[in-house]
Image (cartoon, rainbow, N blue to C red):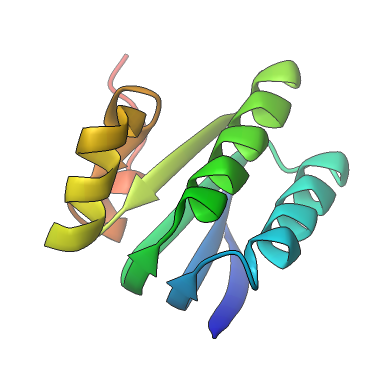
Length: 113
C-alpha cells in the first residue's frame, strides 16, 4: 500500500510518500505526478522517509516524472531515503539522475547562487 500526501511549501510541492512503491500503485503515483506538473508545479520534493520499498516500476515512475519535469524546466528533489532505498538508487544509477538530500529540510533549502 502507498499513501500519497502533498502540501505546497513556498515555491515547491512537497510530496510525502509512505509504504511501498511497486507495480500495484506506481501508476497511481505516476498519474498524480504528471497532473501536478501539468498543473504548473515546477518543483517537486519527495519525502521518502516513510517508504520501505521501491520496485523497478516505482523507479520508472520517478524517471517519467523527471523527464516530464525537465520538459518544463523544473526540478525534482528526493529527501530522506533510508538505507534500502539508497542502495536501490545507487545500484540502479538513479542516484546520478536525481538530487538526493539527507532530510526534507535540506531539500527545501534554496540552491546556493
